[in-house]
Length: 76
Image (cartoon, rainbow, N blue to C red; front, side, top):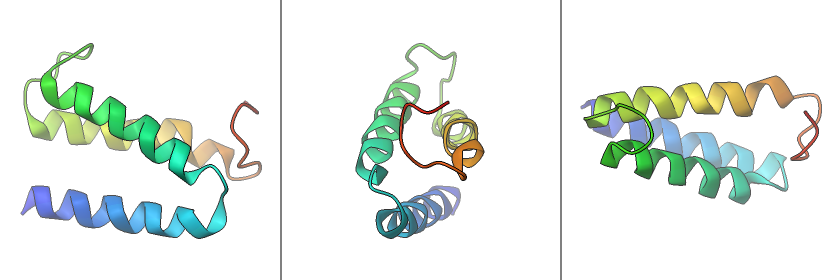
């Protein structure tokens, strides 16, 4: 259930971004890479899927939500 909820949120999230920003594919690739690293237990001390999901959502919030005024990548 948790896994299904994550992918439902994930695909809905980027389906929305695909129409509202020109860098959605970059963010998708960027976050997917971090998610895959987390799932393997890479740089972060995450050892299971739940931690990877939490870190991915945190990553989304930190990287994307503060930029709603200017969507272009690189403008901090």
